[in-house]
Image (cartoon, rainbow, N blue to C red):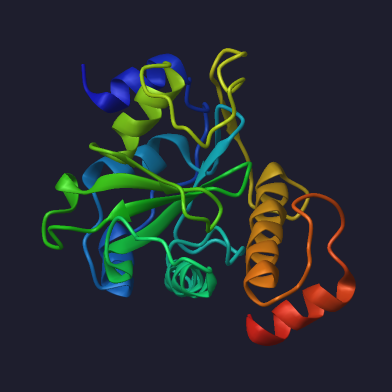
Length: 226
């Protein structure tokens, strides 16, 4: 059984999905090839959330925080390095920043990356999970589809994921990319996490939970223009 077949057995794809994107054009835009399993995954499921927790980035979507082809992957590499260097005891990255390409996010603001080595063999890329721009990393030696199957079946436990992730039967929740959809809520969560990480790295006393003061949001926007 292929990893995609195993995933569809766990999480039924929606009956209707958007037309498959032009992957050649997307790869030209990115300047790199993409793993075939990811392309098959997006073509099969379209936009949405796995297990009510994991959202994969998509090409050419309105939200910059979910846009695989936008500035988000490069911005996250920069932010991770800024947060790391600002720490009292800078922590080690599992890979050089240039080898990390963001391709997913969780409901807690954790990020999923491809480790893009070897650069010309995307089907050999593995998955790295970062805990919301902090020091904690988890590496999975397999594709993103294999990662989803392993996590959603309970075979792999990611330390930064919630303990109750599998309390309910895994499912795929499809979404449109309009502002009133779950995708927009996921975008807001990611953006909030990024603002908190930036604020803490820049000397603001900001608690982990609760409302972010408007002056901090304004300062973040000035430093991170769209």
